[in-house]
Image (tube, rainbow, N blue to C red; front, top):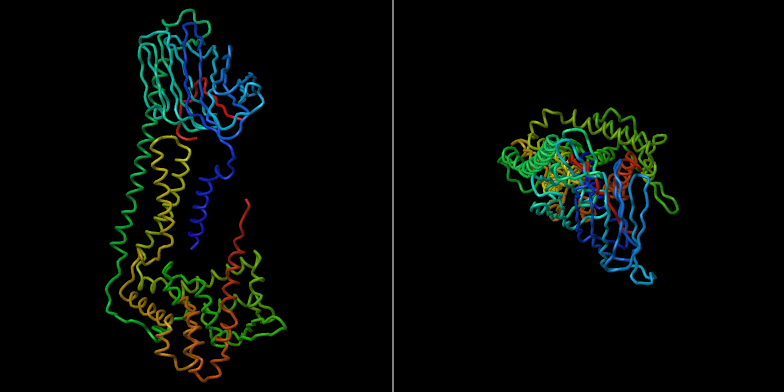
Length: 594
């Protein structure tokens, strides 16, 4: 079914998405082991910043850089850099996007002749910022990113101390709070420690301070508005939003993990087969007079009632056996071409599905002759491939709708459970992909569990597409007997010892075995049995019969290869954030190594 191709494509897409960053990995890397940040809010409005980053370099590097964004009116001055574990020089430059860049060049020796290589280096930045603290009519505020989303690596741990101008009535918020491992306010100092923060994520502090703590705050931003209630409401909304998504992620994880229980319930109700009064071990004769296409469709456990390519090939074999398609071999010096000749005079002897199969092959013939040996190359283009698939689908629909029909199918098989399983698979794949993408871009802790749950549901849903229909579906008593008889006939055809014990008495029966063996997917085993029993049969038609000769010249193999080529040609390959956050504070920015 087409769902299988879709499912495989989705799984491949997920694998490619999850490993894309690793494919082009460089032969060098670095990480930031920890960051120590010390902020001092002065009563004149100046924010004094001291940052210390310990880098671990794997490979050879020239240095590091630190980007500091500046909002309108903000400024930075008194920049200084010191280095432990290496020798360094720095320069400060302006960026087009309103940032200041501090570039630090590092060397392993005092003479600046050797680049740093496989070592740890601590780089300390100090600077002052103006117009970062904001004084409203009712409150003083500092909204500052302790870690910005523009760093190009994770940070394993941040330790921060924020010194305030006063020690009373201070309030603070940390967002997202799930990055915090501990935080406290002692007097005029806030102490914060974090867990690992992934690259692309921010960690922000907002402090509310009494206006009385500021004296002649010339270097603060002044806003003529009341803001305390709005800021507190904004923080409450943000926290509520984080809690909401935590509940959603946890709830979805629980629902997804419990959903397979519905499959168990469906199996118990619709998947268990009825007991029937049939105890046959094998069947020597054809159990029914159904055409090979109908038998193929009804025993197609992957999609009961729908014929597949084996059924189509069996139909062609049957037409050859009945001389409606005449076979010949044209010998050349180095090759042998297998030829099928069309006899339109027998067209009315065929059923509608046989006429459809006959017409399909005739489409690719010339002057009533089809060269089977060249059919694969003829179908190896998109136009002919699509024409083949279109006519093949017409043939399948005739077998399914007209020769079997809904009434007979429902008489043999209850597909309620298999339909539920298919719906679960399709819905599960869609949900798994959506959850996978959402969780990939979310840093909420609860999304981590849901991420792995989505992978589980995706794999389960894809696996269900390959499970036979009669696992969750159920044969009726009549259908069960039909299935078991034809299954036992297939067993007879597949077991050479059984055929040796009960060999057919004529080539007519052998050929029927070969036709229905094709429909049941065991044609090669029947052919091998025919060869082993040659000495026991004295019938010229056996040795030179069209069906036997067709198989001996690999006609079935060539048909299968050509048909698969047509299907492939008809389907050519084509070339082809996150939860809401506050994130509006000053500071932050990012950095990297070069």
